[in-house]
Amino acid sequence: MLILLAIIVAASVVPARGQFAVYMGWLTNAAITLLFFLHGAKLSTKAVIAGLSHWRLHALVFACTFLMFPLLGLALKPVLLPLIGQELYVGMLYLCALPATVQSAIAFTSMARGNIPAAICSAATSSLIGIFLTPLLVMLLIGGDMHGHSLGDAVGKIMVQLLLPFVAGQVARRWIGAWIDKNKSWLKNVDQGSVFLVVYTAFSHAVVEGLWAKLPLTQFAALLLACSLLLALVLGLTYFLARRLGFNIEDRITILFAGSKKSLATGVPMAQVLFASAAIGPMLLPLMLFHQIQLMVCAVLAKRFAARPT
Image 1 (cartoon, rainbow, N blue to C red):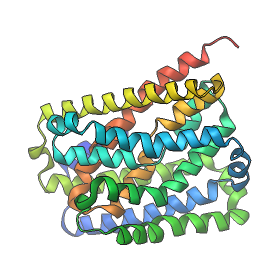
Image 2 (image 1 turned 120 degrees about the horizontal axis):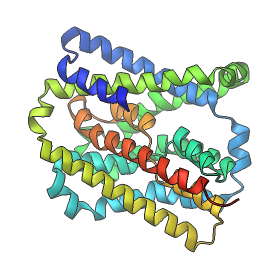
Image 3 (image 1 turned 60 degrees about the vertical axis):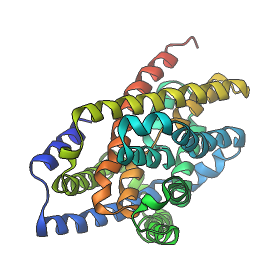
Image 4 (image 1 turned 135 degrees about the horizontal axis):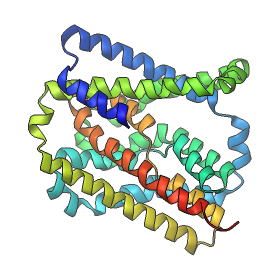
């Protein structure tokens, strides 16, 4: 979180311009390709297949991620649009269309003593499904605000830049899987480094285009309030639905943490593919704020669940 804040400050003070911005764009695209190749190489097909048997849990997680979130984004339009403005509201809709996180959903489920195998399966499968479903949801939710990209263009770019490297990683797993599993501790730097590169490049472009001149402090505070409101509603509804549908406490914990998350690691590079460069900075602000808030709130919730009697 501190590094992300530092990168935003750096992009605001020393943004990439001219030929340096072109080089940063090339480097960012290469980093995104490597990121999704490693995601494919890290994902165990056996773990996903083994976890699919708990279909009721996964169905609810996917419904929360890809149905409840977008519906809430649309339902809150009368409140959010006058509160944060059109550009940031479009960013909120983009946030609602994204898949769940993988690492943090599993980490919080483990910390809270939930159903870890189900969390692994749900989070990993959500990330994979999102490669196909998120562009469709973005088109349905945002429509003309995709800055000239048709659904076919968006899916084509996703296929080339995200899906093909992912599939290549899955194919290569039989040869490099053991090495990947052994070196996960430092390979996570590729995930974080890719996000940092995209954030710096996107915010540099936005700053050059006058982002901070257009975004007063009061609007930033309103966005913080909007993200907190959305997270509170999602957490409450997710846990309520899991309880009403008769899931045990371990499954409810998994549904809560897997169904309420949105992935910064997927959302940042996907925005690079789906949207014009000038739109990415404002588009990512809601996602970045929501991501930080969800981590802090879910850390507190996980600690409370972990303290329950065994």
